Structures are given as structure tokens and as C-alpha cells.
Image (cartoon, rainbow, N blue to C red; front, side, top):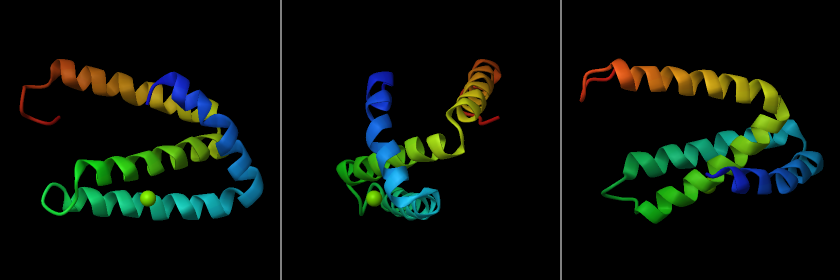
Length: 99
Ligand SMILES: [Mg+2]
């Protein structure tokens, strides 16, 4: 998801949190994560790329809400650190072998 789309999600996600509350949206996030898990476990034989993409989109919308609920600054800090670690792992790892 590019930065512009992520920002565009802010307003509707803020409204969803205000309307339904954090706890309900956390429950919804768990449901959406389950749907993505199912789609991925069925791919490629019993789920299409479009079905997987739908579930990824749902999870990304829920992740935007979760980030706002738990704190964008904290999530951004952790995200940045984990990206840095991934970048280091990619740089130092042997091709085809996970760290
Ligand atoms: Mg879904």
C-alpha cells in the first residue's frame, strides 16, 4: 500500500473506530485475519489471487485501524525497526536460506 492510500484510509478508519469502538474492531480484525489465513492456506489450488487480494485489503484496512487504536507513533517505530532488521537479514543471508 502506498503512503497516499494509507493516508486516505485514515478518515474512514477513524470514523469506524469512533462508531464501533476499539474492542469491536479488534474482534473484526481477528475475523479478517482468519479470512486471510484461510485464503492463503487455500492458495493456489482453491483460492484465486483476487480472493487473496480481497482478504489482504480487508486486513490492511483493519491494520490501519489497529495502528490508530494502539498508537500510530508506536506502530511506526516498531515497523521501522522490523524493516531495518529485514533489510539486514536480506543483506546478510544466503540466497534461498531463511535467517
Ligand atoms: Mg475479509
